[in-house]
Length: 247
Ligand code: ADP
Ligand code: MG
Image (tube, rainbow, N blue to C red; front, side):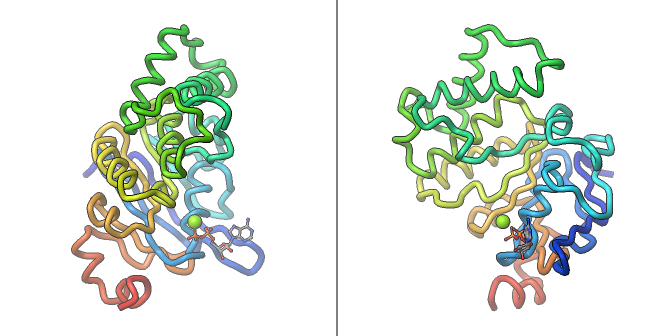
C-alpha cells in the first residue's frame, strides 16, 4: 500500500446548475507528481481551490497527511503542510526578489503562523529566502526589482515564496502558464526534484511538461475523472484521446 498524503474522496461542487466537480476521487502519494489535465472549464481550478480550502465542497471528504481537513481553513491546512503557489498580485512589485521572498516568509509566519512558529531571526530569514530563490533558479535576479521580471520569472518567484514555508504537499495550478522555454525548462527540472520533498498535485496545460514529469495523470472532463494512470496508459486511452488530446 503506497503512502497516501492527500486523499480526495467523492468531492462535488455546484455553481447553480453547473456541476464543476462531480464526484471526484483521487489521491496523491509520497514522492509523486500527479498531474490533473482536462479541457478549459473541466473543473481543475475548482478542485484545487477545494483542496486548498478556498472553496467548500458540497459533498465529499478531503484527508491531508492523515487528518480530515474538509472543514479546515486555508491557514489551518497550510499549517499542516499544504503549500500552493501564490498569485502574482501578492508580490510587492517595487521590492526586490529577495525582499519579496523574505516578506512572504515573514508575513505567513507573522500572520497565520504567529502562534505556531517562532519568528525567524533576520539572518536566518535571509538564508531561508536565498536558498528558496536558488532552488527555483532565480539567483541571478536576487536583487532585481520584481516589476522588472518577466512573467515566467514572477511565477518562479511565487514558487520560491511558497517554498519558504517548507510544505509537505504542494498544489500548483498551471505554473508553466506564460513561461518562455527557458523558464519552463528550469521549472520542470525543479519540480522533478521537489517531488521527493513534497509530492505535487499539478494542473498543467503544457503536455510536454506533463508527460516528462507525471508519475500519474488524471483526466477531468465536465467535473468527472474519466481516467487515471501512468503516462503510457493516458496517451493510449481512447476516450482521453477523443475528449482531450483531440485525436
Ligand atoms: P478549469 O480550471 O478546468 O479550466 P474551472 O474549475 O475554473 O475549470 O471551472 C469549472 C467550471 O466552473 C467552469 O464552467 C467555470 O465557468 C465554472 N466556475 C468556476 N468558478 C465559478 C464560480 N465562482 N462561480 C460560478 N461558476 C464558476
Ligand atoms: Mg483553471
